Image (cartoon, rainbow, N blue to C red; front, side, top):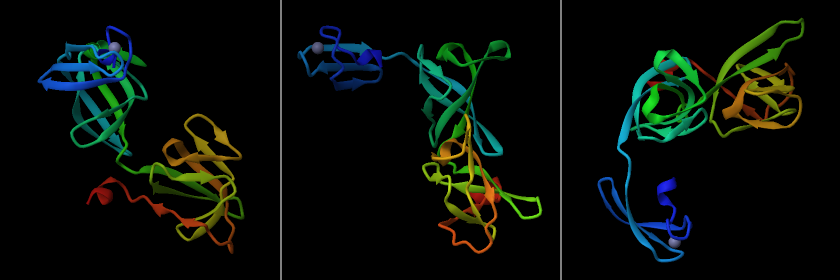
Length: 203
Ligand SMILES: [Zn+2]
């Protein structure tokens, strides 16, 4: 944040030595300069948080005049949310905006597990698809053998938000789907948990 840069020497090795409301006294560890700043008033911005198929209306307090962009992570009272959409007055959608001009923010809950699709190609040309829930930092690797719903399969492709991977690995957080052929007698490295829908998760 720009308020935490020393106005004398430009260092950002700065320490807060006193806080009274929005009045903050700072000291520079580089040159010893001590100064005070008044933090901008926080603005309450409406925020719609999605937990896979369900959405919840809440709000987030952000410093006035701060720029927010798609991909930023904000903290609400009980959640951590990655911004996925910004709407201004007149239903205008933008990639970035300053807090005062935002009408609504959209975001994805990062404390809710990631739900991805697993498509298993069966012999005979049919496909068995499952929704599975996984921790967001779990890695998936092309070539590994997994099990879901009693089907073992080898991961052949990983579809992320940006591209289709035919080799390599990806974190669940950015994965949309994994797919591969059913291998009936293979031993799975791990078993994935089927997602049962929002109400079952929160109960
Ligand atoms: Zn300084």
